[in-house]
Image (cartoon, rainbow, N blue to C red; front, top):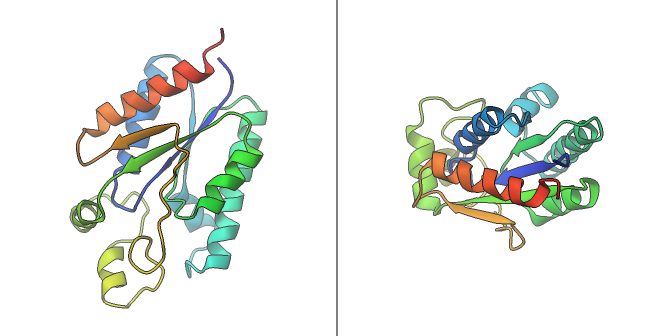
Length: 183
């Protein structure tokens, strides 16, 4: 199997992190090791007091793409768990990472907002972001105050309001296997 990166993108609360963990476990059970790069964890290391400015986002996304490409060069498969709200961030990944799959965790914003407000384990993500965006306490919430540009070039789309995280992970796993299995 070729070395690869899959970027799971979607709105905050769309299920990216849950799908990422499930995908990682499924791959491990099939003897396919991978490293998760979670944007929220990387952001905590890079910007302990984030502003979520466009400049900061550009820098953090460039860093996650660089790390993924470096890991791939060293034979490590990567799962990126990151909103990646702008097309330009994902396009940079396409330019820098040879074997990349974009997996879109598609979810209506209303469902994402509800999930985000109810989740107990934020997995490093800031809490109450949609509420803060609506109340004007944050001006940088994807889907509220800044755009979330849906990936029109995603290799796989999982509609997370219609299928369970395990099924979403399986669909992404199957796409990885089909695309990168040695012929």
